[in-house]
Amino acid sequence: MKMQDGALLRIYMAESARIHGVPGYKFMTDFFLAKNFPGCTVTRGMTGFGHEKLIRTVDVLHLSLDLPIVIDVVDTRERIMEIMPEVEAMVTHGLITVQDVQMIRKVPEK
Image (cartoon, rainbow, N blue to C red):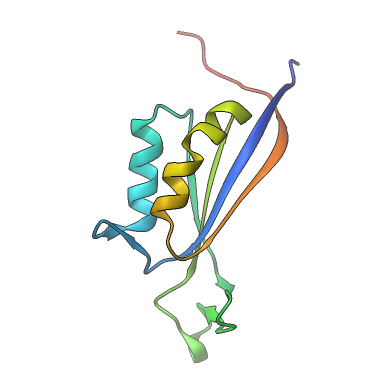
């Protein structure tokens, strides 16, 4: 097992967020793919709220079509920090966090 230092970039946004006319989560996924990151995961939340304090949920009584979205990308700290100015410019409404992580990369042999 070889542990490596890395960073987790996490972006919180609403499902309705758009970047250049495209759903934000889709645009960010394509962005990270184009930048050759090892992976990107988008998670759709079941319930949550942001700075507006308005709860968004899949609860039938309070159904929202604008659920919280979390986008996770892990790589070296250098690579994450390199693209941060672009990410910050694209995410106009949401929250961006970066935290140090320890990672073990498992890549299938060819």
